[in-house]
Image 1 (cartoon, rainbow, N blue to C red):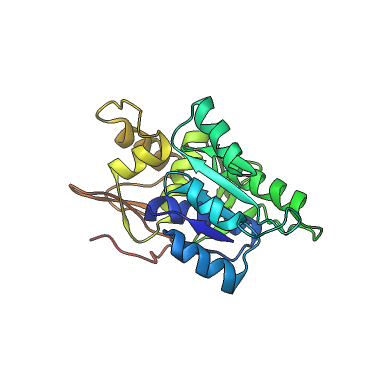
Image 2 (image 1 turned 30 degrees about the vertical axis):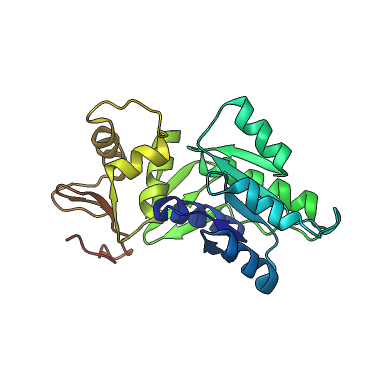
Length: 236
């Protein structure tokens, strides 16, 4: 599966989500890289940021291909208006999803497009493990050891975003952009408040973080823990 995205935070979120489908992914950010990878690697699906010359890239993909051989494309867009969505379909996408999106919706759309496009059965695993966490995308639950948590949609998406970028600092601006969208007028502490809520659910003490460490002046870092309670990454 070829991801045509240029924002590292979003790239890792999409890759983690697609782990439920056990899909192999590659990431590129330019039309030239798309052309090379399609020719050499032959992916089954493209997830494309329509803001990255999406129409041009789709035209490149369909040039010389028959309808039967056409590579399916799911477009992502930050423009949620009807005109932008219709333009994406007119350009040739098989489906379009507005950023921000719920991870389970992206996965459901990927599976639906693949089922329509190919005869082979689609492999799907509802539960993935990240350190000590077990995340069930269908039941929207997270299990930490023997404890099962029921998160809100926003808490689940925030956990996904941080876990997908485990080991690296995710800034408040990146969190806002990915989970609320670029047009959202945020309260000054909306991210910090949601982080506190998620920590409370995870029983994560910020003074001795097990999962979410604060990096002063920069943002937050997810620390995947082992069942023994150790941390697989350390905050700096």
